[in-house]
Image (cartoon, rainbow, N blue to C red; front, side, top):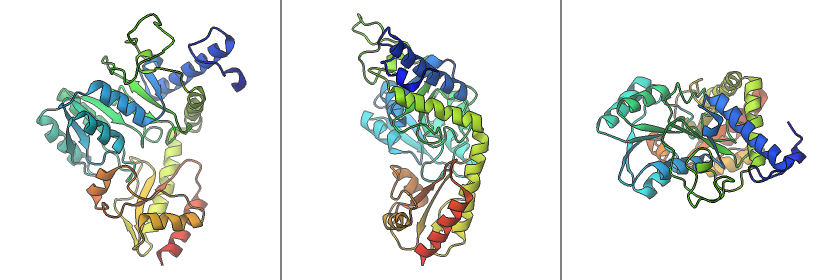
Length: 354
């Protein structure tokens, strides 16, 4: 691939070598995501600046006001708020963490009353717990509903195959489990129905037409694309493939379980779910004594430990497990964390909890 300083052109908007090199970088990113998630073609990979943008493209471009939509009972605001704004009829299916059969039956009851759409979070950004995605999507299709999946907390961690998992629209960020830069994300369309464009404008194609192109990816990509973000995201995929995504996830979950087991032994620490497993994403949410989650995070920060306090933009998740009044402190673990760091974190927790 051409050196970075020679890819500074505007992709699809120039006949010179810099523009062509930038266009090649964009295509390489699409191709790597297509292969990683088993999309039908690179053109069905739409680049966006985060998962929220991808979810808004789908929700605003596919779902009509008043249509019945089924979600989980732990959704993020990137799903809740767009659905609220368009006036969808939202039904929250009860999920039972660690009991896939009960979760599937809950979705069956909700679907039996009729729904055109399932918009579901694959794994909770607060609790890390996941739903049995393939079973739920198969059930949705059995009842005639299309499926939009928010994979913000699962893409890169949990294996996702858009075809075999029955996902019609996959939305994900680049900066979490994909190990790309902030400000990168994507939408994979696995359906004949293309969302109506959320925004329209220059695409570098069909320039004499007043109408936005109706083919992918042009239909959903107006304006100059973020070439540096796409390049970083492509390299994130390379990292996952060269290191082995499953191997990395096993490492991350091993550290998450070590943290969970250690927290469980510390007096005055509250945990709200079972221990992380390979079906989950590597996050652990907890509280320390009577400290607010914000005070606890500040205490950890004084020791150089970076945690997120509060509600994590997912109020339903806190209503679900009884932390509506307190929020939680969330520990997020990545492939570059080490056992020694977890042990230091637990030692610090011992000090803070006294």
